[in-house]
Each structure stands twice: as structure tokens, then as C-alpha cells.
Length: 367
Image 1 (cartoon, helix red, strand yellow):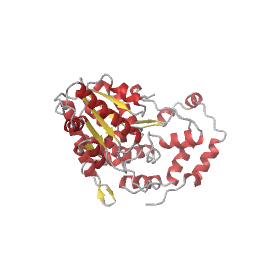
Image 2 (tube, helix red, strand yellow):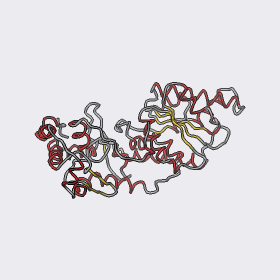
Image 3 (cartoon, one colour):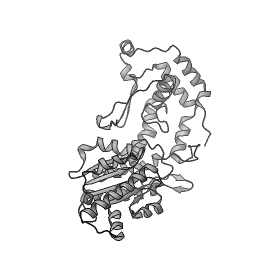
Image 4 (cartoon, one colour):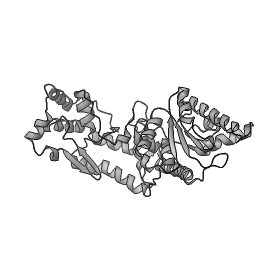
């Protein structure tokens, strides 16, 4: 793998800097002067629709951005990412959120080990858990089926799942719902549990190391709430054995620290793991696929019946089709959130200092 190239040292970067000085594009006039602007600046690949026409760019700027992609050898860097090379040089890690979308037959090695079978083992485990919750097979300590799933996490382990849950609310299975706790202020746990029935509540604690201060503080509060409410209702006695059984049936974890999970009282068999080569904790798709999506899967009545084919298609579009229709690898940048990554990140933000909100579903909003 070649070393990363500092984009600010390239000729294209200097050209973009020069273009920025005095650049003043009026979009109304741009569309009026060029009736074909929308068509020329719009690209499709598979189900993806990329519209750059409403960005403050012209042909010269786009050409310079394409040149920048070539001069930093973006195709090679992208291929290094897909192949499992440790392109995260700061932490010496691979960046393989892409492997979470690969079909079972793919080969992606990290430190000499094919990680794709590991991913599918965890995915199968996660889907099996979700099916048990939705079907009513998973029951609490008194034999009642689960009605409410409460996710306890912080940062990406909260933001990703809650946004997707809000977006998919129309598909939530009747009789099920999810709530999300992230604030270390104990009132957050109180407000999310005050009207719940402990006999039908399931908590998911999302912490890779199971040491995150806010998450573990809230998890302990939730455990206390559960046991106190169950004892007050006469559902369990005051003994340790009954308490242990209740915690094991009403808590699961998203963590790789199985010893700490067990010490908390959660059955390690009900802990879902992920890996240090899955980065970008604030990104929704990674949160779902790194298994913090459990609260969503547990309550949403949607089955991915042909997961392998769909994820393979997604990867093929990103790797093969989209760069071809654009004539370059401009928009397939590692860790870029949206198509048009160079246009948004390099030009609009870094050169022009402008933020452009991405049009999306209202249900994906989070204040």
C-alpha cells in the first residue's frame, strides 16, 4: 500500500485555491445560461441518484476536483480500503465497514484472517435474537413477551439506532416499541422507564469495552429499576438467584468484553460483538451493521430476505458502476458520508466554508 498523499501539496489543490478566489456562481443564472446543466451534472448508478447541479460548482471546478482525485491516487486508496489494508494510519487499523456488507462468499483478510465469516456469524446471531423478540419466543422472567426494547448507549451507539428507528416507525411491529437512553443525567433513565412494565421490558447495553462511563452508569440504574420494580410487584423474591435470572432475561449487550458483560449479569451468549476495523461511530449504516442496530431489528417488522444479493449489489455499484458513470473515482472516497464527497468536503466545506444539509426523510431528523 502506498503512503497517503497530502492533497494540499498537489497542483490540483493549488488550482482549486485559485478558483476559490473570486469565485461567485449564481445558480439561477447558471441554470438559465446552461439549460442542460441539470442533465450534465446528474448521474445515476443502480438505485443511486447523484445530482451535483445545485452545488456551487462549474465545469472547471469539477475538472479540478477530478484531477485532485487522480493526483492523490484515490483509486488505489479505495482498493486498499476494500482489501483490508490498514489505511487508518493514526490507529494502525483497517477501515472495513465495507466488509459488513459483503456476501458470505467474499474473502477480506485482516492480519491474515478472513473476516467475512465472522461478520456473518454475528449477523446470523443478531437476526436470530431479533426474530425471537418479534415472535414472542423471547420472554421475561415471568414468562411475558417483550413489548419495549430500551437501548442504552452513547454517541453512535445511540444516534444511529434512534435515527433509523424514527425513520422506520411505520414498519414497527404492532405491540413493540423502542426507547433510547444516552444522557448520564439519571432523569433520562427515569423518563424512559417511568411508565414501562418491567416484566415486558428488554434492555440492550451497547458498549464495546463495557467500560463507557455514561453507558454503564445508565445500565446500572436500569438494572436497579428492573429489580426494584419486579420485587415490588412480587414477580421475583429478594434473593440473588432470582435477581440473576431476571437480569439475564431482561438485558443483552453489544460488546466484545465478555468477562465484564458476565460480571454485570448478562449471559455472554447474548452479547453481540463487533471489531476495531469498523469505524465512524456516528454513521447510521455502520451502527446498524456493527450490531448496535439490535433495538431496530428487534421491533421493526421487516426481514431482509436476500441480504447477500442486496449488499453485493450495493458494493458493486460503489466500486464499479458509479465511478464509471462519473468518469472518475471522485465520489467514492473512504469515509465520505454521501455521494459527491469531494464536491461537498473539499470544495464546499474546506474551500468555501459552507455547510450544505443533505435532503433526506423528515423521520431521519434528530434535534
